[in-house]
Image (cartoon, helix red, strand yellow):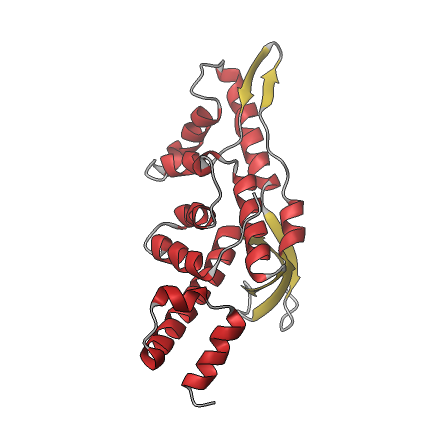
Length: 230
């Protein structure tokens, strides 16, 4: 799945995703990078792995993030490894859940499943996800606790977490890393910077956006220095 985003596809992804829900933005990034197939059908861990690989291929593996202490509000800087995070995500496959002689096939949840329950009242979400994970097949009520337990366990297994200690108040807590939000924030920041660079070079030299974006980073920065009188 490893791809990378060019300057042009970064703007394409940002433009397509800026008005969308966080759930949709992850798929938009993969789509803009040219990842093929039914992206909404990817298990959530596979989606996140693809996003982390995409991030490493586009910006490098060193990923900086921030976390806020839940007690004193101190902002902590995090230095993460996108490749290591991608490797830490488990492979999610179909599994058989059973109690006694009763069993049913449980598949991994996908972005499409989460999108389908967005408008479902909170108390009804577990049943809606249960139905989607089992393909709507009938199963004995005795299996409900086991299915729900496995869905909860899978959700926990698919979360990337890091333990942090506040440098100000020494509070220790576990932070869950939102892969889609992390990658999207960097793509959005880069897109906004690119828009500014395009506007500046177009005004200085009369070049078209397409031609400016096709310049290498080194050449673009050199022309920017010239445009700024440097």
